[in-house]
Every structure is written in structure tokens, then in C-alpha cells.
Length: 146
Image 1 (tube, rainbow, N blue to C red):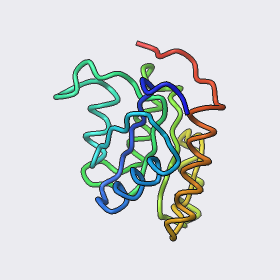
Image 2 (tube, helix red, strand yellow; image 1 turned 180 degrees about the vertical axis):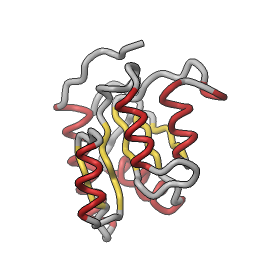
Image 3 (cartoon, rainbow, N blue to C red; image 1 turned 135 degrees about the horizontal axis):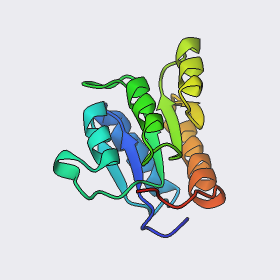
């Protein structure tokens, strides 16, 4: 879809959902590198290039689950929006939550999009295709800050 140098950060603790997402990206020919953070703390290390992720580049887009160990997704989102380096980074909340409060809180904290994970693989592949097409091909992002 776009040059492979544009990395996607997938923040997801469920190994089945990680595998499903990677398979869906492969099926719709998203050739971008996908870096997986298995908890909120690791996501923040990657995003702020700290700890064992010193010098890590910013992703093109973040796919953020809400229910995460160590640091939950809403707190990750809040930290993303509170730092100059990541303030304008596109963040898509990709969650199984259907709670209205999660939807409202995600947008109030600055999420660019809120997508409830579809149940079937076919629906998930279609949602992934649409996300990839929009966020990696059509959407224009400003140059990285810091």
C-alpha cells in the first residue's frame, strides 16, 4: 500500500488478536513493518524511544487496545497526547469493548478513530483492509516531531 518504511505500532496483549491482526494485514497486502507492544508500558517505551527502545522511530499509526496490562490503553492515549513528540500521532483505538464510556473517553482523550473489533475473521480482514487503505494510503500525516 505504502512504502514499507512506514511502521505500524500494534498495542495488543492478546496473542490471538495479534496473530489475527497480522494475518489480516498479510491478507490485504499491507507490507508495512508491524511492531507489537504487548502492554501499555512497552508501547510507551517504543513511542518515547526509552528503555530498550532508545532511538526507535515513531510509527505512522498506532492501533491501540484499551484493556492492557501494566498501563491501560486510555492512559497510554493520554500520555501520547500530552507529549510534543507524539501529540499529533494518529491513534486508532482497536478494541473489543462496546462500552459507551470507553468510546467517549477515547475521543475525549484525542483518539483519531474508535473501531470495535469485528467477531468474524472475514469482517476483521475487511475492517483491517479499510483501516490500512485510509490510514496508510489516503491519510496524510505531518512530519515527525523530535
